[in-house]
Amino acid sequence: MDCDVPKQYLPINGRAIIRHTIEKLMPFATLYCVIGADHEELYQQAVDGLNLPDPIIGGVTRQESVRLGLKALEAVNPDFVLIHDAARPCLYTQDIHNVINRLDDNFAVTLARPINETLQKDGAVIDRENMWAIQTPQAFSYDVILDCHNKAYADGFIATDDASITSNYGYDIDYVPGGVHNIKITTQGDLEMAHMLLSESMETRVGNGFDVHAFADHDAKMIRLCGVDIPYHKALKGHSDADVGLHAISDAIFGAMADGDIGSHFPPSNDDFENMDSHVFLDKSVDILKSRGGKIRHIDLTFMCEEPKIGKHREEIRNHLSNHLNLSTSRISVKATTTEKLGFTGRGEGIAAQAIVTIQVPSHD
Image (cartoon, rainbow, N blue to C red; front, side, top):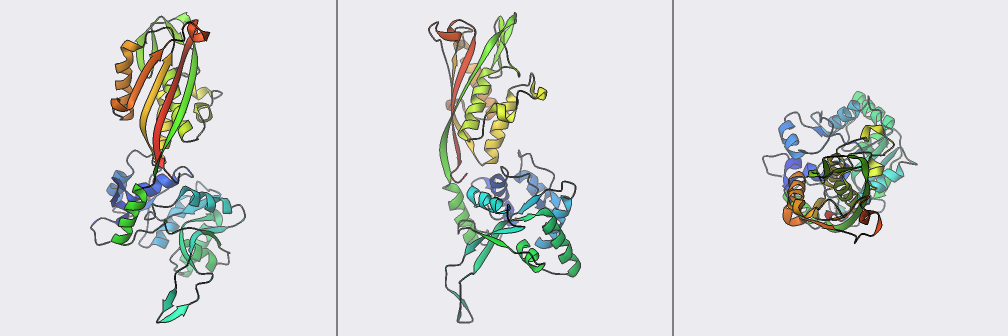
């Protein structure tokens, strides 16, 4: 690569290569990163803000690093494990799905690209039929891959990838067709290609969230809307803090990602979530969005109620959301309307809120 920084920490579109890779994989599994002993500072900078387990310190070779990573998972004892190169940040979500799905019937699976170029060695053409360029992720039964790595370590057997190690010890490898997009960044040319692939892969999605909370029977001094305490003589009823605005925004984000709603992530049957600050729900939706490489582009929130009068608190709500989400107020709209005395809101029985959230996510997510 002809650079002073290990290639997995080079930036693409403002984020380290390893972070792009991590964000592609995080929705599918608990992710453990194996890093060099002297890369701790670079790694922590790259993954800042991501909720990851502590990194595992690797060895001198790739094979030794993988073995140490697998060994560190013995206490976790997963059924299956995926192994992926940090320097392959351009894989598609469908690639990961395809590899995982093949684990139902196989102990060892690898993403691989069928060779379609003419191959020559010393001037002689090599038959390319049944020739594959091996890629990652590779997926294995955890017991199988750990046992094979331990045997290879004891035998002194060296391979360039993990599928080759399982093959050496008698396991068949199932090949899942990959594509040219899943490049392993090795040269400056690869880096330029990754810049193009990652910069052109965003799409816009829109999610809708709607929430309702009734007023409680007891007197109160304030009501909380989008984290802002507004003086009012009634409070809202709910399993959590009943912040109808944050609930609507959170559900809109989950909806844009096609990832359920607040209830599926925080079941009301779970007493741990009783009286919970609704910022937790919002933060969860945003964390998942970030883990997929996405970001919020715009929020349009409408409150429906006769009282309290929300208009004079609009800017305070916008500023609070802006600070909490690190999103410009120019991208946050807060409105309020009555229902002309119609329905439960018109009778003053509660408040409804509707949010429309626009996000950007990788187009292959």
